[in-house]
Length: 329
Image 1: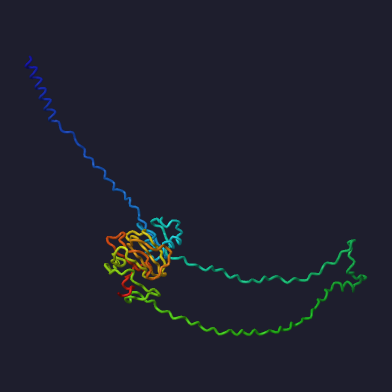
Image 2: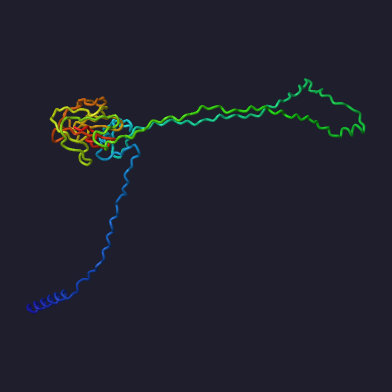
């Protein structure tokens, strides 16, 4: 019996295993994944850069008021005043600054034409006759005629119109207006305008009334290059005198312009200014008038790899080659 039970259990177990083995696997439904939505474009349209109006400048990243003034040939204090800046050291990117002096506009007033008031002529009025106190008018007195056919017929006739004698007006004597003799106006002689001599014409070119001189006695160790060097570098020893290349007024003296060290800027006229960089010490102050050849600083190596003087000449803020302005040595 035990054997048969074991046999039956074994058979049942075998059949169960076989049945499980023959069952088909559960179907797997492959569902297509929903397409991934394309990422929405979040690009914000970039606003076009602002364009400065004539005579103005839009502040860019990294700008300083000193740099803006140097690049446009102006005094930074003037730009601050023209732009209404309370603190010249605080300017913001995108801020609009005036870099040219405001023009003094003439006030134009409209011409008022003299108008003549026309009034109607006053017609003489006959004052009414005075009314007596009793209210009975006694004048004019009307005539009283007895009734008759002749009187009635006479009363029906219209009164004869009053004929006024026509008086021809006398022609007024006209006075012929003779044109006044105007003095002959001779055209003013215009002064001959001589073309401005440009520095590109050659060395030592005359620029208006400016006569340039070398700011130091050292030799040129780096020439002018519009891309990398906006002036010339002159060799020297620390403490060598730095002289004003021409007469003018100091518009800046300080260390506020990166890469120039202790810097002096002299404005000579409305077109030209000169810059003296990497000094050891500054001997002039802003607003001070200097003459040609006056000692304004001492040569040094501030913000530089060696003692030297970096000298620039700028025309309308644009760097020009000093070699075309300085006299030959």
